[in-house]
Amino acid sequence: LVEEMPADPQLVAAGWVRRFMADPLRAREAVQLYTELGYEVRLETIQSTELSPACGDCRLATCAAYQTIYTRKKPASWLK
Image (tube, rainbow, N blue to C red; front, side, top):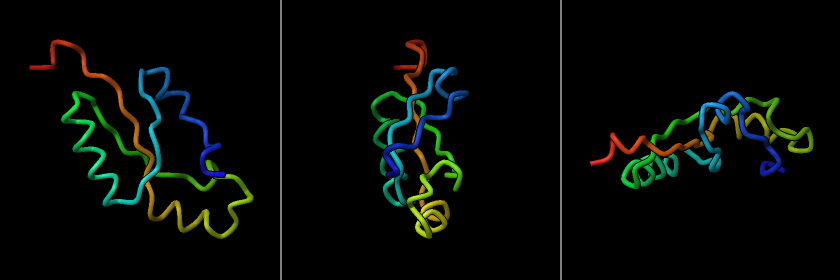
């Protein structure tokens, strides 16, 4: 059900791609990996309204513990 969560349309319009949701440890690992691969990375707090009502009480726990990872390619001039 979490997979149904759509990407933020404003971020998509700015060139960001929604990758996945992760707990803080995995989010840090993802930030490091995507950065090493030449991406800009941003972490977004998950809002309960973004999750399906079928998620029930898990929605609160997910919002408190997980983040959504977005990436976009850095312009070529930023790469070394």
